[in-house]
Length: 587
Image (cartoon, rainbow, N blue to C red):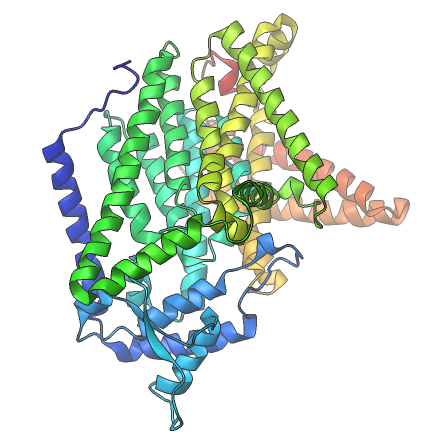
């Protein structure tokens, strides 16, 4: 049993890592807290006024579902914290944050009351109904980013900067998965994010920063050539998770990274035993939990030293709220938490109104689906001895266990907390991909076709085109929240065009020649020809068929053929380095 539950760490080393990380986290917050208040406060006031136009829980992308809500309650509370930070008392700002509230008030109501009664530009002379409220269990590490930036720009401008960073990092991570492991797993990764509306989460500071931490952690694993001490690494990730986000979607920083670790290790050595893979899960799980809990506990301890028993009372109250079942029985509350969370996945959003029959059918479909997964997994293990399948299944269960454990929180806040289910989706998609790969590899006829196709540039061209189209769509949908449609479409097309150019050059057509002015000019010219061809054919075909869908499909197909021919024979006609592919996974 030791090989399953072995822990590869040194206590002295972990203590050093903890002390250094704790000091860095504390110092960065203290330094952020001593920034002069005036510029920050002016931008906070402007941000709260803009937030009033949106409301407490605005729904974006013209959707009607609460799963597309932005949590401005939390954002208003963050601005309330920052506004009430006294740069002359940095220790208090760091370990004993306070907000100005009225009993029963929402985040935005409290922020407006704060500006009215104690704002720097307030002329209020009446009796104050608000009071200061301690929220000691939160590190709110995002303040180390937001407070310096608030000296230059308002919160909304910061929001869209972080959104852009998050999307670009997710795309970079997908590209690295494709390069280092398998392009199909990269698609599974992006789908797991899209199905949980990660671009909405990137608009809320705690969720956004955990996503960014997760993507950076995955990139580190993928890019690191030397061996990584996974225990130490995940210990740091756990600490940073609780630093940025105590309870919104913390689990994703473990789940997505551990899947990446398993895939990388298994890709290097397909003969890895189940015990080795399970031990990686065990070690990283223990390390992440230890890092997460230790920084949180020390945070509470330091808050206690600064403000006394109020820190302990607030923390225990929050834990009780997140685990309590209220007036319902624990079974009903768990069922509600699971149903609300699972209902957040995009394909299941059709379940809009609750009834006992619908909820029963919902869970029946979910059980059948998981039964199919188990059958597929069993066949994979039996036929191909894929030892990674069971570890992936165990990881896929982690968000469900998390939801059940903290059912009180998820029953109320499933509309954003459900994003942890991205771990479940990612792991399950990988299992299905492995199963399909296994079927294809066992079929001689299919394999022969693939051998003939895998050197075709057109296949790689279609893959790059598909990913760039997806990128175009995501960036367009997100940016159009703030900007007009023409500006949004221009930005999204430019981003997709750059991605397409780089990957078509290096992967599709495999050009050795360096990028030069001629190549860039010809590429831009071909794209203009492509747009002109697409719009012209679309216009002509609609005039003939009067059916938008048919005209769109024909125009897209013709433009795609023209685009491929121009790129292959005009833009990228330099010396090509043809490589030999040894497996279907590198198609």
